[in-house]
Length: 125
Image: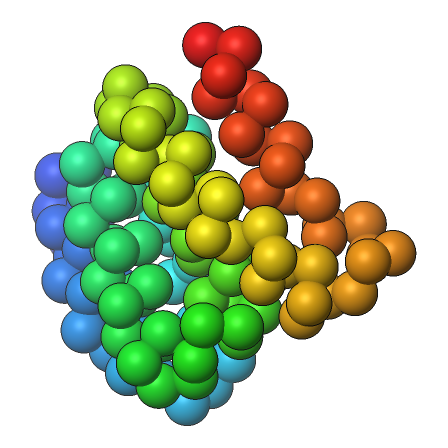
């Protein structure tokens, strides 16, 4: 049986909005993160944002503000906000994330300054 792209997208959305956000498996969480990123790169910003915001809210409640998965899905939201032209929201989330990235990953980690870099890109737009 062949499934169309619309069916695949709605299936990804349905699955990503429920199961991975509640999953204990870090692999499933990472898969949900990748799905949101893939939809963003395809230009499906609304679906990507719905998935990413759901993941962010649930993971933040479950794991706390400084969890690595929470931090990285926050950056996914920043990219999507920027794609939607929601620059002020992107900057606010970046400003909130920067100290958490540095504290959680360490000053010398390659991703510790990611929110600063994305803020600069947002200002450039």
